[in-house]
Length: 111
Image 1 (cartoon, rainbow, N blue to C red):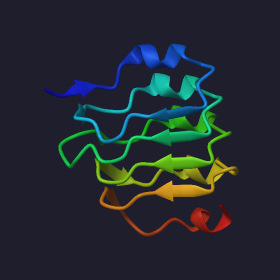
Image 2: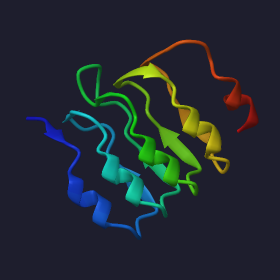
Image 3: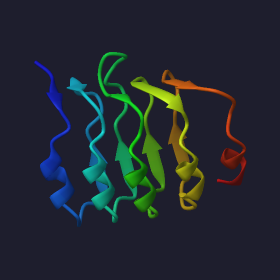
């Protein structure tokens, strides 16, 4: 069986690490994940092409403490969001095997 990312996770605002990758997730990343402003690591990797998909919610821009963001091996589509360039504490960004489109954004050079 597969499951969607539960909305109640947004109530766990003291979380610093959230790793829900390597699970049979489906659906989209809920905008409420942007409430987890203390996260330093977010792993939504390896849910598969038919797993987590769609665009990343802009609310992830609130996660300014993030040092690690793993999105690889998912069905994310569209352009890599510009707000990732504003995550100035980001040290690791995993994007392999996604369906993001377009040129590599220049903001990646500033991270």
